[in-house]
Length: 516
Image 1 (cartoon, one colour):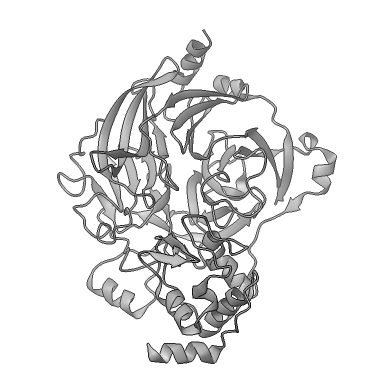
Image 2: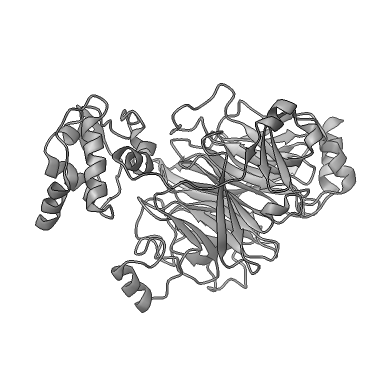
């Protein structure tokens, strides 16, 4: 009987909105564990779920619950009235390795007429076990998901699969796909990788798509990790850059966002030349050093007035919530504030309830955890909401943090290493077994200076042997580093974690670059 009652509540609301009666269902009291003062508002942070297995996508359900995907293949629904998690489906076909697995999800905005849930995941198929990325539609019935229908299948990889799923205001499915680590795909408008795809709910190509007979809405993307549609219908994405230029983009039909020919803004001579000859679209914002932007959500509620008309962005490498204020037209980012940096670790996804409550999924049990994580009760879903002073324990209110902001660190070797290297090679230089090589005692690090500079400046592609172990993970080029920065970071690497190699001077760097 319980699932029938839940289903009745689910179908009582359309297009992601809940009535006041439905809202009464989710009044379980979640203890406030920290607060943050924000202008006239005090925000409380509560934990509504913990001990999860790498939640990747969270979505607000019209029944007043949180739906989630977990990377290894489980789709669940979190009943906020009880705090109970109900597993709806375990997808046995999901293939999980590193960032591959069960990824994006979207609920149809009119579940009463179309009780569909759309998910994206990686799988292996055929005799050669080819990695594929699938968009699959399920039907929600009887508190479970049934009738799997594959709408679209494209090439996948162990990384760069994207992938988020969302709905346009006119009821079409958007699928943000990664370039599958194939540099030619993003610029090929006939390929489906590195694109924003627009799809009918039955998997067919919409008749009004900008390229007749094609799913492609826009192209030139590397690895999108966030996708959101505003109430006015504007489409925003977050995207991982390579070594530089993580991006937020405003997506428009038939526009080319540059990858791999252009990263971020058109600020290099070669990029300007390409953009002058072939139309390219710049991002609204980019970050260098990179922050690994993840899920995004539009904040258009009056509940937290200081954040109204903003993009909420979770970050992985940055380990923070970013609030990106938009202009009235939604065409420019006017400010950025950083909150809860390093407090909850990697923040993977965000969703917002109709009443303006914010839910954030952490991602600390994935393949690449940050130092100090995971905590014992990771991964978690956090609730951030405006609270009254009477709701806050006195000791928390007294210790209340105020405002947000950014800090410009001193450009030392340690700082540069933290910004550009530690996410892969870790703070202690130990790397990630089988994926990223260690820097402790590595012959490439403590050996010839010029050889090390060559690796860092030009990057690596293909197998390499470090301390007797083989690695085959591409490393981006860091040629953009200034001479002083390159000297500082190389000296830091050669003198840390027991390494006792000689320093790299600015003159060493200049001499090396003159020979190139």
